[in-house]
Image (cartoon, rainbow, N blue to C red; front, side, top):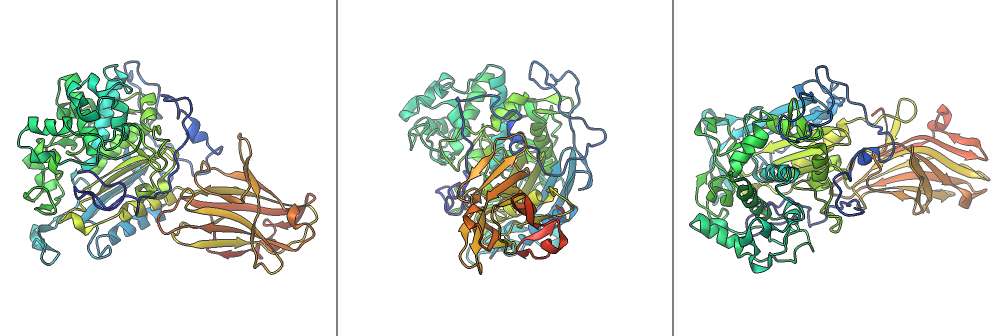
Length: 629
């Protein structure tokens, strides 16, 4: 079941969980020189100079990723050890324990009215950094309802003794997170020379070329730029061949390569390619190439009946809200098309638990290896995290992975943050810049899909996870922090000064939702009623200075400290007040802004210096706080 990335519900009942009207403000990185396997390399981590986030303690018994084996296959690592996971404290992970506690509280609030019905019956939350899983917590119920009463819009609750509580190991229908596994399997075939990214799909599936699809490429399937509409009811065809005919005869709604349109049909097509070129079914490929090498023991298509007591229930699937009348779906795939395909599909159908997904997350952050197993080469992981959709701002997309999507990644979103969501209430977010990962598995269609909309629990959890990675002050024990509140304006105002050759100097750190939120340096003469922008320049260690002629900063700065200089010549011999203004809209936020070491000089002589206690006491903070982290 396709998630409607543009907001609202599609014909398939797709999730109203996109961008609240289609705008998420994401900014794609430019791509120069075409496709490059090494486009990311170490460059993204170097943006903005040295990272100012708290370091990750080196976990005892773990090791950094090492050079891959030459064959790129599972076990081809020559026995080298990579970072593996263990449960541990927030401190061991280099995370702030208070923020993880608040993550649980925030997530638990969505077990209640959100705003009318619970967003989910229950969830499993997992967060980690480096080799440490610092949070692994179940909340709510895996099975709470027997049915949905459409007349009263209420759930028919099971008696308490028949309800099943969520546990750490509860297995979930991942829905569209399944697309990531299909994408990994495809990239493995690209590594081995069996599949070409730029090749036409008809090279492998000649039947695919009908109805104007003859030029669609493998890359366009992986990046959702093929032109396919979001969803087609394949389940209406009574036979497998009939379902294929619907796909072969489906015409693109936009010319391939000219627009981004998220579609289940892309990954179903990719499944057919993989099965054609390998001679194996997708479930066999998943087991042999990913789950067995990584020991993901609770990840598979079509879980056996013995797993059912440990699986989260999904929807009371009945028309008109479902395409099929199935009653309470529990232990079988929720997506109608995947169900009609026997439970094995490229777009949906994989069941898994949080710990197994954490292994997958750690594998990708390791560059494709976990323990003694390697499933991808490092350059292939970089390719999966490379934005191929720079022509479609706001829809940054790697191979299978979505990139820089604040609408569910929240403040974890960076140009290299990768992830995906699933219609049933699942999400996975990987942030290579901080080596952190977040998994939220919820059964949000239990008892019915219409009870939840948007991605508020995912965003809330991601905001807390981002905040759990400390930003250390550039000078001393504290720095001024803007906070991360939505729909707010926070100001940090300096006392009036008069200078003949004034210059403001300070350290600046910022990460905001691009364009929608921003940080502004402003000046006012006299009483402080008429504020004007102050142009400034920032420079990160080892990088060229960057001019900010509008006196503002927005978006991604590399999450490192920048040295700021602002010439105050326009206010020469005038009593002037300076302030920082941080403004956010109602939707999403970044990690916020920090200012430290504020100093105004007059010909090299300080006329204001935050390091002097008397000067610091005259700073007026409205919404900003002095923070150690």
